[in-house]
Length: 114
Image 1 (tube, rainbow, N blue to C red):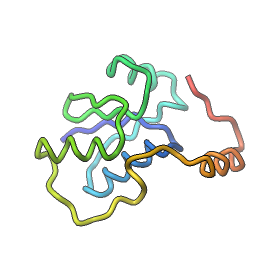
Image 2 (image 1 turned 135 degrees about the horizontal axis):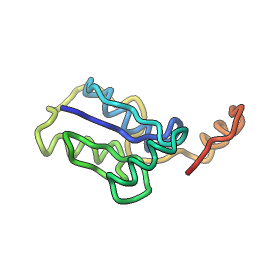
Image 3 (image 1 turned 120 degrees about the horizontal axis):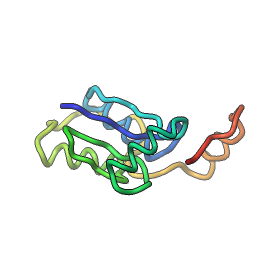
């Protein structure tokens, strides 16, 4: 299975997708859409919309999805079997206000959004 995940470096939704990949021990390409305008443009072109995360699995684009939705797609299409492992972070939500504040405090340089 070939997986390309268009993700933000620090984002609750993106971390949820990463957690699902880890839960199932899946190899995937983690594509940074914040620090590369080319990666962001590729995601928009392939998905037809500007929101993230987007995950491409064997040529099928799942646009603006949560980790929970990616997991449901893979289970429904029998791309993975049930796993007894727990996800490492929430798979169904963005960052809390507290998490956003901690990220702002720890930033040495501004995050670029295209």
